[in-house]
Length: 422
Image 1 (cartoon, helix red, strand yellow):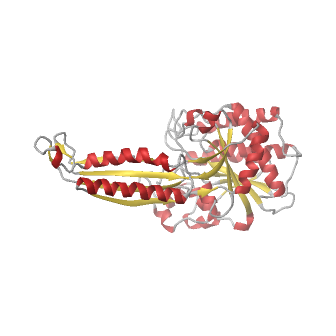
Image 2 (tube, rainbow, N blue to C red):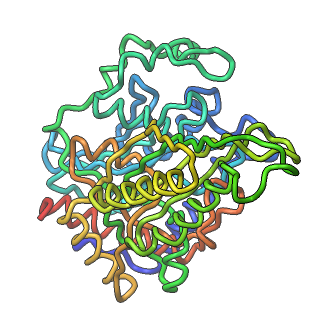
Image 3 (cartoon, helix red, strand yellow):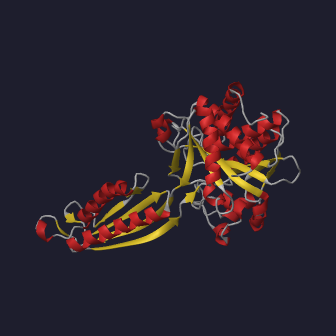
């Protein structure tokens, strides 16, 4: 390990340990027979306690912060050194897979375990955080754990209720946390140098390339809009086709345009109409009012804005030609998060050293790195995931891929913690 390299045998042992630990964590669930573990639940605390034990075994000082993140620190050559932060999340969606989030925490522990076994310290300390909430499953607000670290919790979050009318503050009190102490989780910018996150790929690109690992360029920005076409309802049998103001036909024409136009802008852009409600909603009535949602995502803000402008302009043109009205209201906006160039380069070198070549790809899903990037440089490493399926029990990674991931992760942690971000 003196040069950051982990041999294949050690990586295989580490990967077997990670797979077994993913299975252990999957047993901590509020629902028998499926994995559901939400923020500030008893199961969340159980998972934190177990991960904390594994951190201690790897030679780390361990604590749970004021928003419920489980944290560990492996000291650097000098006490109080700046830290390289590693991590991912330990919460899940309902009926989840066992690798989304957890794999990133457990592989990070293995990088520290390797240093600890060699009794090796680096110029930077290594810190690992198992974030308490990335998915937003319980309270409908996301990145509560990582925004605790960055100190960007809105004051209103503590009064936000879950589906049982239990507020964040009440849920905190139930497990011994104090909603008035949230800001204690915030880290000073000077304490941390950069953040690295390993995660399963939530898409098929690595599988298509027959590669275990890939380097993330950016986390897609997203815009979500509530849209509406308003025409005129009428009798399905008596209104001639040439006289109709059919809101559903207009929406259908627009949906086909969205599907055909989006890839022409860029293969990295995606657009989805996810919901559709017709009114009056009767088999013998021409739809007079259609409400639908639009979700557009991409790794760069300007091309995303240009696509959205094109789509909305066409919707207005369709409505005008058909004698209808169209309206749209944006209710969700998150900018694209660019991964740090120096960390991308370091990750690419590590991945190339392990699997012979490296590919770069954006992330279509959100991650804790979005929040962390507001304070520190971030880098992300993707691991191949069967068919790209995530948020589903069918999530699956191969142990040999995890072994390669640990080799690459250990190498990049050693490089960055030894020489800083270049």
